[in-house]
Image (cartoon, rainbow, N blue to C red; front, side, top):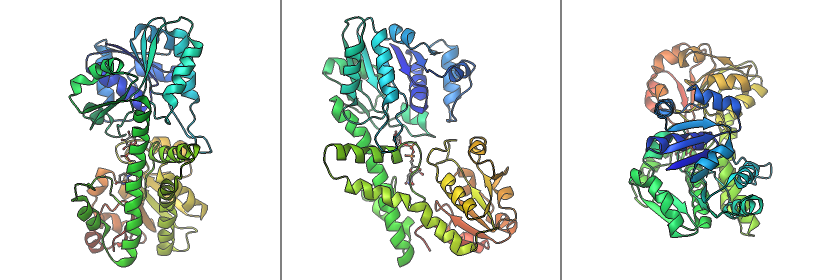
Length: 430
Ligand code: UGA
């Protein structure tokens, strides 16, 4: 099938690469010339395991193309995916300007029947909006359909998630339209749900908001565990054995960051308000999340007071492991707050340091966790990169001025960390 994907961010680029890998001819479109030129040369705009190999191989085999020419891409394809950014406005409402602009351009380009598929994360009702924009702006009176096909991939495991998703959701106006999409995804052999456009749009928001709720729930329970002397890791394990609850997304820590959970939960609050429904539950989820870093900062201060003039090592900058993404990363919030109190920061991250240098130039960037902790008054583990699990804790502590380790992701065993000589603080555990 000939497919056009508009937008080469996480979702668009991975979707394009995977469809090409399944044997389709894919044209990836982006308005950013530099990005497209880079992709043509095999330079990835993001770090994602396995992506570079998949893109270069499919491009070399002639199935994957990159262009800034949206009209050309639309004309050559039967199915057009919209995968552009939907960032939040200050009010929390989703900014749909990129989706609108793309719909407008698609309208002026269509010259035969097309299926326009919305893959961007959007509030319920956006399918209707896209439909009305195309209807109002098309130059040739040809038929078209608008479908919602939300994406559930995670950064850091985007390729694997796209090849083996738990489900494919297709929101289409009727079964015949859905069939074209079912055909595209058929080689994956995974469960597929066909529904209406509005339900598909709600499935995406509800899924992300539910996972965010799980995280805030376990973090709230961790707060109580910390005071009551219970161990949140065992509590989560004990809860997770219940199949109705499940073990996943019950890791207590610094809360959720990244480009999805914070923005989608706020957006669902906004959608609920728009329909005059009470978003109180989701507001509480956001409140618990917003308190994660201030809570950790109070504990760091308690351990190394006064902060002024102290050196703090920050281990991990990316919002989660296996990505270089710093959007809504807890590290930025923590570093800014510590610096505001007069602390000096030495940081290390396996992948995200180059990007971070541009955002926080005053931080001292180091080549390893051992180098970052050298001479520090405390170390804070912010991102649970795999390599941090293997650290020689004795060596780490010996290089420090004072061996205080604040483990924001419960990576270490408290007894082992203390045996290695650390004053050790973690989340929801003694
Ligand atoms: C999330 C969803 O998991 C994807 O299904 C979805 O497609 C994506 O958003 C999206 O809407 O585009 P992502 O943001 O890449 O994916 O990352 P997650 O692995 O879900 O982690 C999100 C945040 O939750 C991270 O900050 C992570 O540290 C935190 N988290 C996750 C916890 O604090 N505890 C957990 O148990 C799990």
